[in-house]
Image (cartoon, rainbow, N blue to C red; front, top):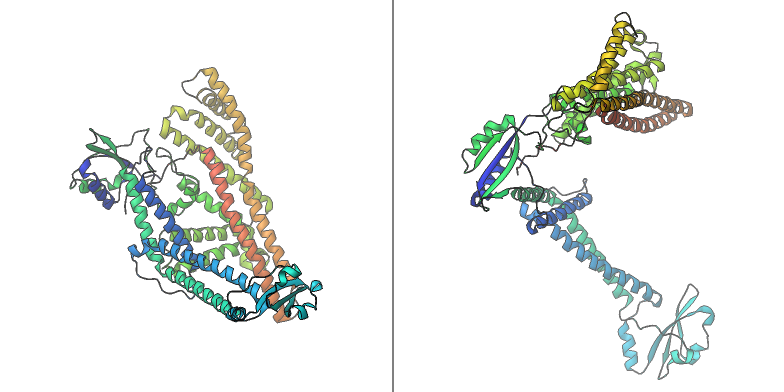
Length: 605
């Protein structure tokens, strides 16, 4: 259910406004109503948002770089250090980029120089000072003329890929002009020196990589800094949410808080220099939503939040879909072995990883336990256990149980449809309650007519002795229902308009209700398909294993584990998604759920 909220109106003197906001944040119980006209392009807020984005990206990058097996322990939290992490990462990456660019150039130069071998360019300069000109050429093998060796003192240095690398040693002669060849540039550095430079660059890049990995020890500091930035962003938005009054000398701020916290809040506000007023929400107010459910229903709140939160004046459907979802999941998965595995895995996680599993995550693990237990119970209906049937084991206990709880395919098909009818009728009842709560009894009369009509058909079908189908009592009930459906579907409108709308509503109900009920066949289909695939993998494992005891056992285990691993993954995914679909489409639609509420988010650090 939705917690009762109270509206707070605060009036603060403009000079005390900033101090009051800090006090309000320290209190941490007020959801501040942010104004639509907040200037999100404000320079200060933009700086915070930009810094927050950079810090988030930096944390994500550091987490990807962190080696969990060989990582250094985290450093103590230092918020100032955490704020500087993005700049440090940017500095390292810029340096790495420059080094990589220099490395690429050096590698290209080394590839060019390698065919000429390792020599000292200074020797080339000494020969030139002595009057000898050294020229470098590359020509195709077929164009090389051995006469050049006599005429120009040509010396072949290297042959590779149908090319000849050679030099000429001349005095006062320019072979390039006479031979019409393009001369290569004389290298300015030796191959050895270039290789040493490349090694040095690679070492520097490695050091920068290590420096980047060392920063992963500062992840807690970066996360703490991000929380501070998010708090500053929230504070800035809240500060801009006030409405100036009395020539900007007063600041008016609106907020919300759960009714149960009002005494504590008022006691705190009495010590502050601020005027406040507490009142009940008006119908037009956009009230934030805080769930207040029992321990069992709270486990299903994350599922409800996947769609949207209810409006403040709506019924919270979480307590009402929770039992259905639990049963639907069990029927969709439908294998006691898979349910046992989910239950055991979640229980082991809570026992051995209780330090890591905290808060909402612990609730999700508990939900997995409940869904696993539901699957084990629902699995008794068909007897599936990792694709084998417990009712075919010739064990007296299971043989006796088969007579009590076993459902064949036809019965499972009918069970799915019956559950669909029950949930849809229940949703219609909630629709009546919802309309009465929001608009009053008059607006719920049409829905009451439909509910009574469908309920009477069900009673006449199941208990003909109590109320025969088409009998006098049944016809009277149907007639009264028709009056409500056709004349009270839109209170205040023309009667002829009501009749027309009633006919249209009847058409939609007749076509939509059938489709809604048939949607629940997926519960039977998912359980059946999962069981068939499980038995197929069992047959493969038994049929393909060799006669050798050791080899046969290994082959059987490999096929069994691999096959059931895939099947369980797909079935668990289907068992999670399809009941969601039945909840958010069929159930929510027939309950006339509107949604659109926003979550209660108190202003705090």
